[in-house]
Length: 173
Image (cartoon, rainbow, N blue to C red):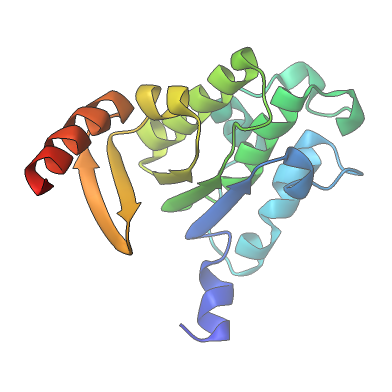
């Protein structure tokens, strides 16, 4: 893709949520303001986008704090908002770089539910790079193992991957 084509798909067809919500958000805007800002380029191109509240509801962001300052939000709420911002234009593909790595277990579960909800409700494909084994066991349907320069796909969650990998390794020996 050339630069113009990349500009066309960034944030609309392909979106990304990074570890650490601060890298995904504008701290001077409210939650609603962050989602609306993220939708700006798509709106300028005449692309239909969901309503801000629809996006926040989809990921389970609490409406009672959607207009307040971000510095009053918990790390989990900030990362949930980062997911909302990333999916605000209903991308076909959401890439996640360790989206739960800096969260406690309760916040992690809320973010996992949000990612699963985006996949279920909007059909968005979610690809995540993570070392979080709980995440891998609870959410993943496919695992791509990178081994010596080769990608090896496995259907199933983390536990299933462990079993399949053990069988593959035994066959190679």
